[in-house]
Length: 392
Image (cartoon, rainbow, N blue to C red; front, top):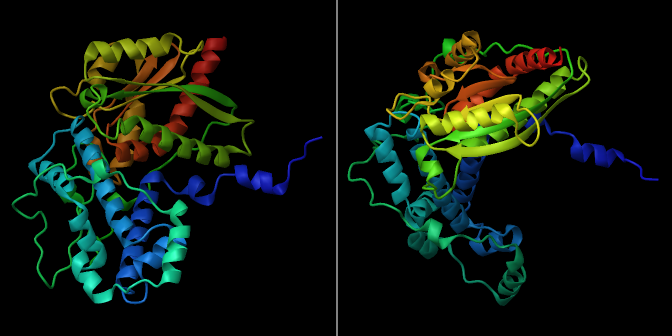
């Protein structure tokens, strides 16, 4: 007879971070931790050799530099994908160019605090035979890197984006968390924290419904470039929505465990269509009819909610809805704009099609991640009502 141990239960229990830290916040925490690691190694150039790092942990300062380049490629693609659902600025285009032009040499200069050649002259020590033997035995754990991804994709901009001076610390540009945001507008000074304003007010999040709920979800990415396969990293918006949804539903389950029997969901369909009215409508109607042999309870679209000429998702959705729900997105937008006023520029709509609730999310992954914690408790209430109606 099989038994369940305490260790088994612990392994399936969500961690504190999974339960309480939103993905966008966790990303900033991880970025800060990476920065601390880089500074830690800069301060110990003489004591900590790269070969020792590789032997013990499988990575070294060179790996950190290469990971920065890889992240620059991903970030550039994310910015370009964001431009599909918003009007991109010259600043944003220049930032993409700078990210694409960032290569290993430039990243290594940042990690080492000087050129790699200069660092080797100052601090690198000749490895003994014993050290080399240990290094060779540890090769199975060494990090590997995609040379093609590390190759630069553009020429460096001619004009620096940061107005640096020898005595001034500069803050890197932060990505906007909703569509239509200029990254420069949200740059935060490390020396002087921003004054407390209404933007720092915590959004009002309603409690989950006091009823059992099991729902099926479909996620539709609306993007010309993603549909054409033009992103090296593939679609980022759809997976980001799925990840944020998992985090939010886990938190709701923890909050509601004493009130309801269960709160379950399953993503049964994920697709990508171009910014085309007929394609959007066709796929949403398909979801609302039957998918995987069952009606989809919640249809989430991501992308096409900005002000660009081809941002037509709200219009395409609105014309096929049986009943539009003005209050849902009005409340979500109002609460999210208390944190980020630019959230009000997302034109997404919501409503009922058949027995499905359809909701438009912005194409920016971070924007969608911030909307879902406010949206989902209300969406769950709406879906409980829709499921009751279908049984009557």
